[in-house]
Image (cartoon, rainbow, N blue to C red; front, side, top):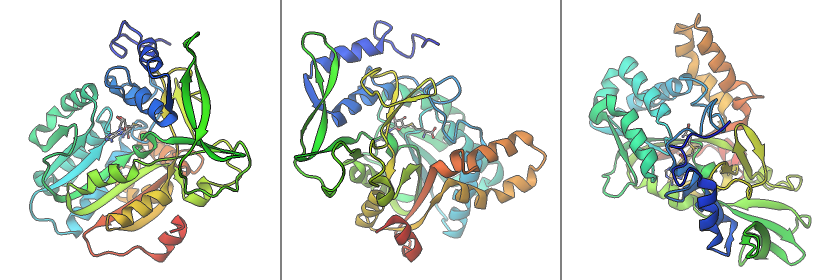
Length: 372
Ligand SMILES: C[S@@+](CC[C@H](N)C(=O)[O-])C[C@H]1O[C@@H](n2cnc3c(N)ncnc32)[C@H](O)[C@@H]1O
C-alpha cells in the first residue's frame, strides 16, 4: 500500500523530511520527538490532510465504524440541553475533529431529531493544524454558520457548552520514563552523527511522582500537558459538560507492576508496533490515558466528575431510543455491536464525564473507581 502524494507533500516523502529535521536536534526527550512526529507543522503525522483514520488509513475509531456513535452522542447532548433548560445560544465544542465525521453525524442528528436545539447551537471545532482545519471547514460548510472551525480558543466568549473529545488525550505527547538502578530516567531520542540513525538513551529525570519501587527496566509514560489542554476547554464554558472518550485506565491499573512495557504504541496500516523510531511522520504514536490524572485536573478546574465507565455501558444506556426505531437496520445493529462489545471497542474505551458550574458533586463510587 502506498500513500498518495497529497498526504506527504515535501518531495513526496514526509519521513525523510522529518528525519532531516529531527537530525538537526542531536538529542531530545521522547516527548519532544513525539510532538514533532505528530505535529510538526509541515511533516507531522496529524499536520496532513486527514486520511489517517478508517479502513484505508492506519486505525479505526468509534466514529469511523459508522454513524451510530455520533447519533447516540447527539441524543445525549440534546437531552442535556433540554434538562439544563438552555434558552439562548449554546455550543458544542469538539477538539481534534480530524475528518469532521463526528461533527457531521452529531449536527445531522440534531437537525433531524432535535430542531429546536439545532436552531440555537454553534458547533465549534478546534484543530491547530492548517491542512486539517481547511478540510474540516469544507466538510462542515453544508451546515452554514452553525459550524465554525478554529485553530485555538483565543477570543471565544464563554457560553453554555457541551465538549465532546473522542481519542484526543491519547494523542497528546507524553514523557517516556524507565526505572533504573539510579531511580526514574527519561527516554531521549539521539541522532547518530555518522549514520543519521536515531537511537534511545536514558537521562536522569529531575522529578517524578511515581514511587521508586518498580522492577529495573519497567517502562511507562506520563503527560504534563493535560492540565493546559483541559483548561483551554473550560475557558470557553460558562457552564456545561465535558465528555472525554478514550482508551486508558485509572492510575492503579495504568501503573500496575505487571505492565512492564507501558502503553506506548504506533499504528500504521492497522498494524501495531512499539518501534516509534521507525516511521516518524508516517505512523500514529499514542499512549493510553491515565484517567486518575484527568480526574485530578478536573477537580483543580472546579469540575464535578459525573461518571467513569466503559464505553459499552454508556452507549448501551443511551442507544435505546435510536435502536427501537431502527430495529430492522442490520448495518446499524452491526455498528452497535462493534461499539459496545466488551472484546471490541466497548471494553477498550472508557467515558469520563465532567460537569462545570452546574452545582453537581462527584459520586463516591466514581471517586473509588478513579482512585481519587
Ligand atoms: C486520534 S485523532 C482524533 C480522532 C477523532 N476525534 C475521531 O473521533 O475520529 C487525534 C486528533 O487530536 C488532535 N489534537 C491533538 N492535540 C490537540 C489539541 N491540543 N487541540 C485540538 N486537537 C488536538 C490531532 O490533530 C488529531 O487530529
